[in-house]
Length: 295
Image 1 (cartoon, rainbow, N blue to C red):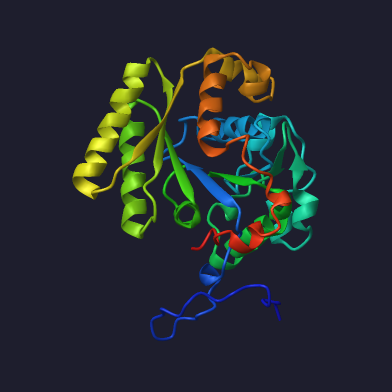
Image 2: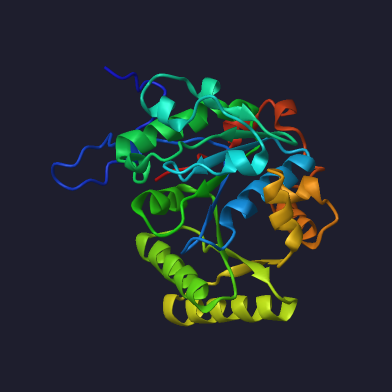
């Protein structure tokens, strides 16, 4: 029998026949968690996740980056690391979280996804709980968890977003990307997202184009969803990003002065204050930390 002694059961608000200790009701890690999502692929979401994570690491944060496109790994390539094992070995019970996590650049550790494993595209509650427990086991050496969700609006993406402290929706000024980003925001609001998501406009031609895109999403979200979606800025179209990808290196380290790198660091600065005290020096921090990742 699985040992659940270290897990608290959520308050019983169940329908007849529903299990109180369903995996989605168990408590989750305490570390602040950011999920980066997008309504469609091709908008630069994973690039954003990798570079924001590395920029956070440069500020001194210990970052756990989770490649949550579980069926199709790509963050390992973007970081230039070569995992021997991945989440597929974890879910099969062959490896522990400590055995699959790999060190990346600048204080970043990566939980790698599998490659070409379509059966992992959508995780059931039990397998999703295994992943969450793995994150929990790795959190003692972690200040921030950054989760790069799969593109689209699959059930695993939605559950990760609902469980996070912050959700960052990445889109581009392209009309289809804008429409899909709004659809994701709408779905998350309907499912009960606690805090309104944040926006990043990627691959913007100009600052005015980015602001116009963000304004349109904020406007329709305010009018039809009655929520205030704020913008965390934009990342300009920058050829350095493609050059860095070909080098299998984050743009913030490959071309640190490039416009995209400056933008990624600005996003990271919203999440981490380098002058904040080290939690390891605060003996009461673990007692006062709010519980995170409650599905």
